[in-house]
Image (cartoon, rainbow, N blue to C red; front, side):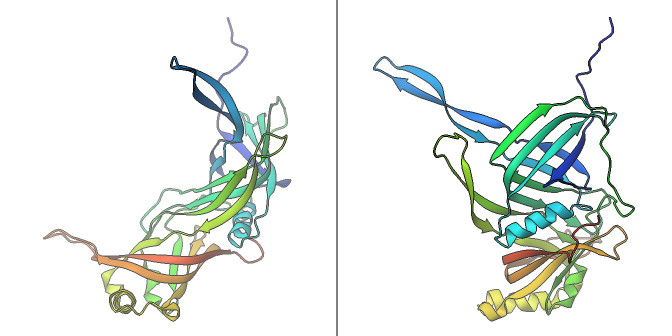
Length: 308
């Protein structure tokens, strides 16, 4: 007997935001389904318990995608960091091995919840991906059987970005361009859910933004001015507003000649610094690990973010 249906499918996705198809490579996507919570409560004096459903909620979408060609998503993140809190609607189309759409997952009035940038490493060669989590107010799903194939709207500049293509800078400390590693960091947007009235699904409203610390390493040979800043700012306690600095993390194209976009860092202060340990008779570069706190971040990409 020949099976007429296949239970397996390849991972091909198309992300559309407000009617515009993103050219970014989508590696993984999950979440975005309605869930109803279950309450387990005691009844009477004989230790009996009953279970019943309570409020409805929607799981956030979690998307892992390439940085090149991510202009629409980056503009959405940029607005969120600037506290403009744009709500976006769109859909994710799942396709089979032959790129024929099989499933559509629509979302409405979504807010960015988390953005995780990958670790940067000057010696890395493998591709890296950015993770974005967004919370919708409503979703709709449907299975489809279309013969129209997904069209990969990829330009000649669209390539997999590697985490070695970056440049770090701090005003007044030119040697920071020799930073060889920056750890992964996540920016979080608080979201408050409010259940009210007839719709049963919660309304969502943005709350506070949380900007993380920036942690990285640099060769001791290039850390003279960083050590001076640490000595005055931390050890001597000269940590007033005027002693804070600005900086940037630039994400470069694969040729490392063009900036895809930059994350501008404001109100930077140094909170910790240490010379990393080493073993005797080991031929290795002596490195300094630093930790900076950041009061505010902003994405800068000019008129067009990404490499679309």
